[in-house]
Every structure is written in structure tokens, then in C-alpha cells.
Image (cartoon, rainbow, N blue to C red; front, side, top):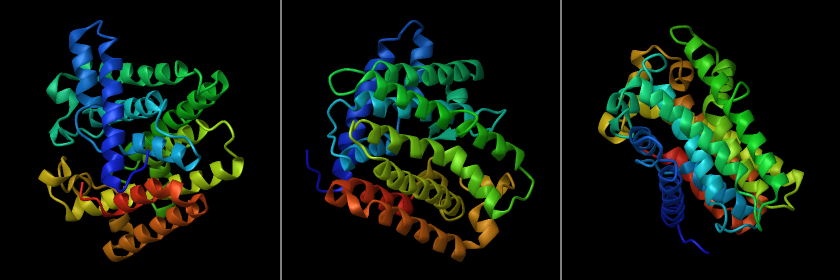
Amino acid sequence: MDFDSLEDFLSHSKGRVEQYLNTAIGQRRTSGVLSQAMAYSAVQGGKRVRAALVFGAARACGIDHAGLDPLAAAVEAMHAYSLIHDDLPAMDDDALRRGHPSSHVAFDEATAILAGDALQALAFELLAAAHGPQLSSEQCLSMVNCLAQASGAKGMVAGQMLDMAAEHDAVNLAQLEQLHQLKTGALIVASIHIGALAQKQVSAEQIDKLRVYGQAIGLAFQVQDDILDIEGDTQTLGKAQGSDLMNDKSTYPSLLGMTAAKARLMELHQQAIDAVSEFGASADPLVWLADYIVTRKH
């Protein structure tokens, strides 16, 4: 299937993954409140950038959307789990997410924690069960391993721990980038890696180039978040503007100044574009996504 713009690509990716997630959560309706809380955070709002990266990386490697829905749904389920837990009072204590009350506000803390736990388990279940005519068991196992490493003590969880430890304590640029490479970048890179693994003949060189792309846009995503925390507004952002400043967090603008932070954003954008240049037109959606990440307003 051909796409003419990022909007077309995101719309198609978003529609597919949200339909799949709705169905998957509905099939696990052992508790009505739990299912509601899972769907509230997993399906409500968001551009589905990580799902789009799964589809985009697979496309760059010669695989179309067909059969990739459980892979895209898995990374979005994992992302939703991380957001639920990040927003908890014991973590970042954020009351807003995507313009709506955070899960623990809409429900309660215990339900939010359990919904996050269930979404994390669902992510691995979807990957493990994705084998079939297009995906071998070996491919699925590699994807499970990829997501596990990106989500745990080598990825998001480690990044969140570093983030909490850095509250009210100044960190240098190298420490800040390590924090964000783990907390935000790890799942972005994993989304791209999982999409590439859908191609049985994917080469190590292709994986390496896609990893460079992922690392660049992962950091760019956070740099733009830091910029928007200062220049954005609460209604557009869908979360409290200025929360980083109020929490005395180290950010790219606070360490580099706004001008240098914006220059770093453009540098990372160029790194991403250069990394996928040899894939040709098949990588157009990845180029569009890199453009979107550095120009988005929320």
C-alpha cells in the first residue's frame, strides 16, 4: 500500500493498531473495571508513533502492513503501561495525560497499577502469539527478547530510576542523554527493531542503520519535549506546561540554553535522515516521522 503523506501513514497505522488493541483487550474482559482502565490508557488519544515506527521499519525492509498489527499493538501496550506507572503519585505525579485525567485520577491508584501490569503482560503475549505464515517462532522470540530488554533494567525501568534519582540534582549532558536513551529512546529503538525483524532476510547492516535512526529520533523526541515544556501551553500539550521547571528537572534548555537545544534538535534530525538514506523511497515514512518528531507541538 502506498502513502502520499505522513498524515495518511499515521492515520492508517493508528486505525489498525487501535482496532487490534480494542479487540485484544476486549477478549481479556475478566474484570470490567480492569478492562476499562486498560482501554482508557491504551486506546485513548496519542499519535501512535511507536506503532507507526514498527510499520515504517518493516516497510523500509520490504514488508507491508499486513500481519504486523500484533507487533505494533505490543509496543503500544508497553508504552501505555509505562505512561500509567510514570504518572503515579510515587513517580512523576502527573494528573493529566493526553489531555485527559491520568489513569490513577480517572480510576484509582490500585486499578491504575494493575491496568499497567496487565498491559505489560499483554505486550509479551501478543508478540509470543504472533507466529504464523509470515513470522516464525524464532522471529517472535527475538522480538520478545528485544522488547524485554528495552522495557526492563536495561531500558525504560532503568531510565525511570535515573530520572527519579536526578530530581533536584543537577546532571551533566552525558548523564541526561543516557537517562533519555533509556527512558524514552529504548522503546523507540525497540519498535524499529521489532518492525525490521519481521523481515526474515534483514541484514545486520540494515539493523545497525535503523538503530542509529532510532537512537537519534529517541533523543530528538525528548529534546523537543523539553522545548515544548517551556514554549508550549497546557491545552495543546495535553499535560501541565512548565512541569519540568516546577519539578526542578535537568533539561536540554536548562543545560544548553534554548538556542543550543534547538541546534541539538536539528543535529539529531539530520543524523536520523542520514541513517535511512540508503533505504530509498521505502523509508519515506521514517523520514516523515523524523520530521514530525522535531516539529510537533504536543
